[in-house]
Length: 416
Image 1 (cartoon, helix red, strand yellow):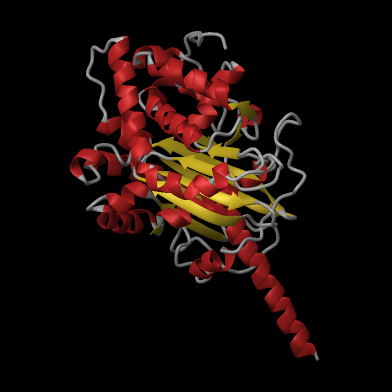
Image 2: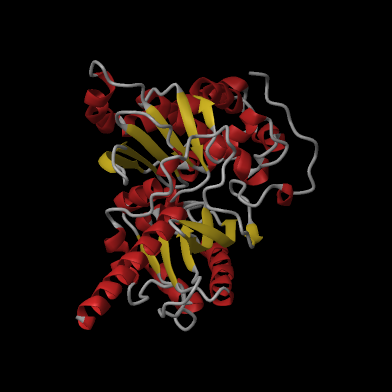
């Protein structure tokens, strides 16, 4: 592919579309949750909202114990009621509010802000005061949106940064006291399940096992699934403590860096990630090398893959509609990763769809992505700009439908 070219100077990252990676978002949106150009992955399998873990998730929110607000959320059924999902990660705080639409949902509001909650965590083992303040400010915005949208039911989750930090529990308590938001610090396994639930419909059609991965700020989850059922069956999964923030901080740049220095740093990143995947790689051997297996399928959901897909398309600014559901040759993503790994942070910042916030972190994401491509050598990579939040919404809505069906059945029994 052609060399990466810097974009024309931009006033700020606010020129990007609303769901740009690591970009602050504050808007209402009536877009369907599954809109995608015709050239993208086939969505003919439909929107699969029922899933094996829906009862587990719905039971946790049945009495609004992890609803977003203490006073502002009602559990009474109402027409066109709104549901919400908050995902507080190591790098971003994201909110999605939607209403059911048949087996699908329509987004009515969303918010995303870079908070760098895990900044410095790799060195200190603690969330810094500055990082907690950034996250708290973003969560206050989320709380206000939940009140104004009169959200019926919400689930709010925190991931790797709060799992690892010594003061993670203290921060969770502070969030509840100051915003009313009750954050559920979910396990890596639950994080993987929600990511799969949120994006699996974008997988290429095909036979045999497929891999879905989510490169986060503080961890990366890989999930091997069987797609023959309405809801994918998880065959195996792995979570490693390498995300774009944790990997970047563990292998800091020593400026000034030469091209050789940057290449050496990139190789060290890849080696660290590859080592952490070693046990999982051994478990994958029967799925990779057995005779007669179909070509492997791969789908990624993360700011890394959406950013690289944007560069592949030559977009002047991020556009979710062009990226979500795109199928890209894996070799093209490797080429872009190799080019980015040799650029300085200043040069990376000049590229469209990267900008200031992601310039430091994208190389670590590339190192993780290339290692995944070594692990599961698919010829093509599916790109998803959806994941945990969408998985939460589908789980909540599936649980609500199940509850309504049970209530209807009870009414029929009483009428006998």
